[in-house]
Length: 218
Image (cartoon, helix red, strand yellow):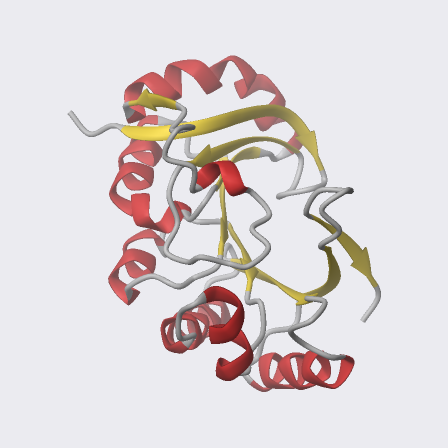
């Protein structure tokens, strides 16, 4: 039986990670080591959460099915990096109502096949690209953004022909890593790829405040 570590299940979320009322399911584990991790418990080996099979997760979240159906909401998978659990998400989707929305909050730094498997079932992709400049990206995450660019291209091409697929890309200002000029270049690159829904935000990296984000206008 397939099981994954889930560190949080957050119910009754409105307007923060998909349309309508959503339940956020956060997986343990990530492919990157960001200098300011927004969800550090996803990388902590001592905080692995609770093991759920797709069937057990479905039983846990279906209590809010009426909210999902009434508002056009559903389940948002985050983490950590949810796309390393692509087979799990696919199996979960096969259990739930086709009227539930499935959203993915991701950095997209995974093999292309992980994304490809979920293309037909994901309603919204919420992507944090860090920075489109590979040098900046690598200094912040410890990895190349080559996979990110390939997967963004795949999503953008798929969105052109499938109205049910929506992409929102978050472009953060990361103090000490990118500048206003870098952010503008990232936005320009994204628009050149055909991505329209772009949200700019600021990472708050003051340890006394705790790591977090704050939205700002483009």
